[in-house]
Length: 50
Image (cartoon, rainbow, N blue to C red):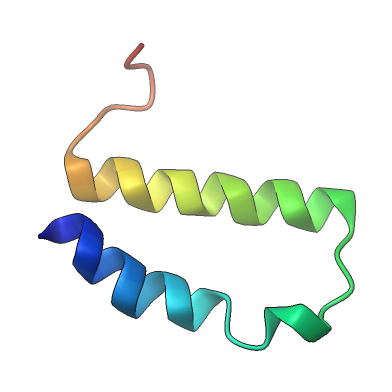
């Protein structure tokens, strides 16, 4: 499925060695926004869907 592909390939690549990163609030918000954007894109959901 699309979600399994995303979780296996994209998310693992984005988070590679993330345990050693020092997280700042702005960076964390940007990564979360990027993650949600990718999920919405894979599922064909518009950004204003509620």
